Length: 433
Ligand code: XLS
Ligand code: NI
Ligand code: NI
Image 1 (cartoon, helix red, strand yellow):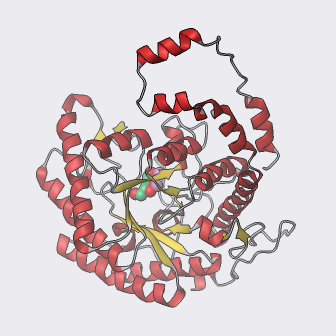
Image 2 (cartoon, helix red, strand yellow; image 1 turned 30 degrees about the vertical axis):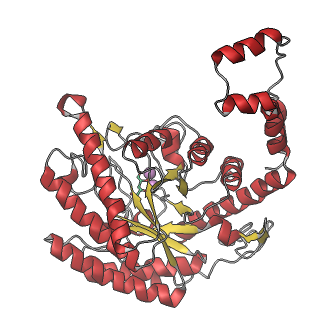
Image 3 (cartoon, protein in one colour; image 1 turned 60 degrees about the vertical axis):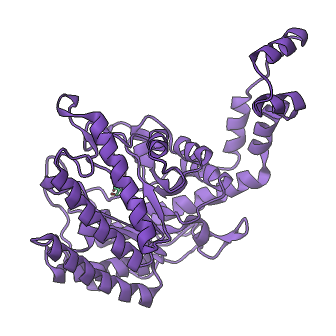
C-alpha cells in the first residue's frame, strides 16, 4: 500500500535506540513469567480511530486526508488494505471493529448486511494470509440519528428491533471471523434528562436485550466472551453501565453474571472517578474481568480524549492487577486510542502505536518484576493474617453470630491498631517502575 510505502516493519532495537519507529521494550517472543510478551498483552489495533475517524472535533471538520476515505464498498476495501498494512508494519496480532467502520451503511438493513458480508469476506482472506486475528467485533448503535434516544433503551420498540437486527448481523460476522469476544458499548443507553425518561422500563429493556444477545450466542455456538464496556457518561448525560460495579449489579439482576464480563477502558474509569486499576481489581474481585481498552485521558479536560497511553508507571500498576487476576484469557489490550487532529502524517499513526505498545511492554516488565518479588502480595497477606485463626474463619463461614462474637470480644484483650504502611508500599512500587 503506497500510503505507508516508505515505512519499514517496526523492529525491536533495544532501550537505547534513537530510531523513532523501533520498539525499545516490545519483544513479542520474549518470555515473561512463562509466557511470551505477545501472549500476555494480546494487542489489538482498532479500526474506528485509526482508519475511520477524520480528525473532527466539536469546533472543526476533517483534518486527515486518507486515500481510503469514502462511503463505498471500494473505499471499504481500500481501508481494509490500509488496516492490514498497518498491522503488518506494527507486527500486532489482533484487530477490532464496529460493523459500520468496516462497511458502509446501506439504504436498507438488507443492504447493510450485504455490505458487511462482502467486507467479512475480505477480512477472512486477509486474516488467513497474515495470521492476524479478531479480538472482538461490535455494532455501532450510537452514530446514526435513529439511535439518538438509545438502542436497547429506546422509547420506540421499532428501534429496539432494529438494534436487534444490527447486533445479530454483527455477532454473525464476529462468529464467522472467529472473534475471541463480542463487545457491547451502550453509548446512548442512558438519558439526557430524567424528565422524559422511564428509568425502570429502560433498565428492563436493557436487561432483555442483553439476555437475547446471550441466548443468540449459544444458539449460533459462538464460543467467545460477551463483554460490556462500562462508561459513566458522554455522549449522554448518564449511562446505565456507569462503571464495573454498576454493570455487575445489572448482570446479577438479570441472572447474567456468569455469562457476561467487562471490557474496561482506562479513560472511562477516569470519567467515573476511579483509577484504571480500581476497575480491574473490582472486576477481578467479582469474577467478571474480561478485556481492556487501553488509552489515557487528559486529566484536565473531563472528556474521553482517547490518547495513546504513555505513562509507564500507571500502566505497570494496572498490569500488576491483571497478572494477579491470572492475566487475559479471551481478552487483550485494544488500542481504543486516537491521534491528535494535527498528527496528519502516515508516520504519526505508526509512531503513536509504537509508543503505546512500548508503554504496555515496559509496564508488563515492571509488573512481572513486582509479582516475582512478591513484596506487595506478602504485605497484603500479612495485613489479613489474623483471619487465618479458627474462630475468625468460623465467623466468616457463618458459624457465629453477633452475640457469640460479642461474648468473645468482651473477654479478649483490647485489639491493637497496626500501621497500613502506605508510604513504604508506594516506595516499594517505585523500585520497579
Ligand atoms: C467509546 C467507546 C467505544 C467502544 C466501542 O467511548 O470506548 O470506542 O470501545 O464501541
Ligand atoms: Ni472503548
Ligand atoms: Ni471510550
